[in-house]
Length: 112
Image (cartoon, rainbow, N blue to C red; front, top):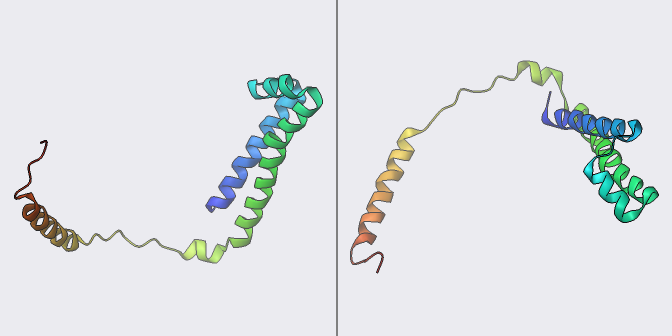
């Protein structure tokens, strides 16, 4: 399963949880604030758009994108290569850094 599908399933969970809270009559702080400032109708509409419709739209988009890009043959045959560290490169870089630091350290008074 790729990251788009996981993100789409999470957006579905967020949308379903928010929709359940609205339909069951529970009121969280965001809905209460929106109802207080904008009134009941507009407050519920803004809450529905922000907490239900937008995550549902993201869910449909991400799940569709994830299914479209998912290739089972590649997922089954893909083996991640072993991590290879090029230690020699970093050793060479440390020598260069130390030479640069030593050359700049002369004639400099720190904290003055």
